[in-house]
Structure formats: C-alpha cells, structure tokens
Amino acid sequence: MTDFKDIKGFAFDIDGVMTDGGILADLEGQLYRTYDAKDGFAVRMASMNGYPVGVITGARSQSVRARFKGNGIPPEDVYLGSRDKITDFDDFCARHGLERSQVMYFGDDIPDIPVILAAGIGVVPSDAVDEAKEAADIVSDRPGGKGCVRRHIEQVMKAQGRWTFDVQVYKNRF
Image (cartoon, rainbow, N blue to C red; front, top):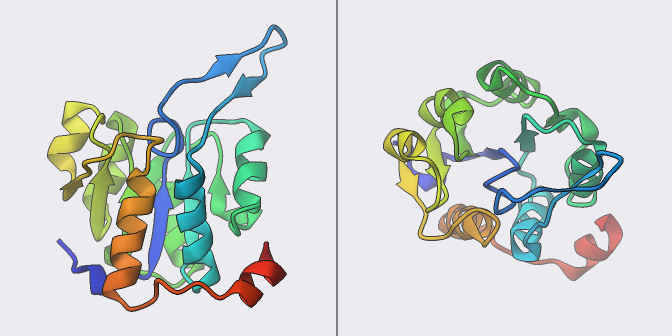
C-alpha cells in the first residue's frame, strides 16, 4: 500500500460511495441522489489545494456532472456510464500525469475492484460488498454517503500538511 504522503490525486465512484446507494426515480425516469455535504466539501478542499479529482461511475445522469462541477471537478474528469472503470482510471491518470500508485480510489462494488486493486490506496465504505472489502487497502469506518470520502481525503491532506482553507480562494473559486 502506498503511503498517504505519496497520494497526488483522488477518484471515486458515486452510488454507494458519495451516496448511500439509494436512488429515487420519478415517472419520467429522472433519477435523484442524496449527497453528504461534508464529502462534497472535502472534494472542494482537494480541488482548491491542487489535487486532480475524478469521478468514475456507471451512472449516466448529467446531474452527476453538474453536482461535481460545483465541487471543482471539470466535466472531462467525470466519467459517466463507465463500464470499464480501469480504462477510465488510466485515462484520468494519464491526463494528469499521475501514476496509478499516486491516486486514492473510492469504490464499493464489484465493478470497482480492478481500480481498487490498481490504485495506490483503495478505499471502500463500511457497507461495501464483501468482495470490494477484500480488495481494499482501507475499509472505512463510515458508510457510503455518510462521510467516507471526507474522512480519507482529509487524512491524506493532513498527512501532507495541505488541509488548509483559504477563504479568498474559496470565494473566488466556488
């Protein structure tokens, strides 16, 4: 496992990681997710402090892209409809000049396992499927959508002395 000090980027799945996995659907087929604001703030902190952050999800809803644009993730770093997550992960790494070992990846289910294994540090929420837990370097004490992403982004940034909040940068960027 890579040391926290070696991490230079973050990537994560959505459903079951940034959300609790629940999805509401209306009669027109629109899907709605609930995100934890503290997880979102950690993504903003990473983005504000120069870490590339990517989303690799099987979800296809443009609402996911819109949600994370507001957290500082450019649209090209949001991989929607991903059916081969390792290919998208490698693209994310290549676009940002990162080695796989320099990225912390958050996933929770079977399609995430190749990336969990390839990443420098693979993290799963406490309610991830057993196969993902077995592949992970870290099984969080937090479930998906309830601060898992915040906990571990914050750990990395604190280990690197980069968990700093600049109100001017925040005001200008968000």
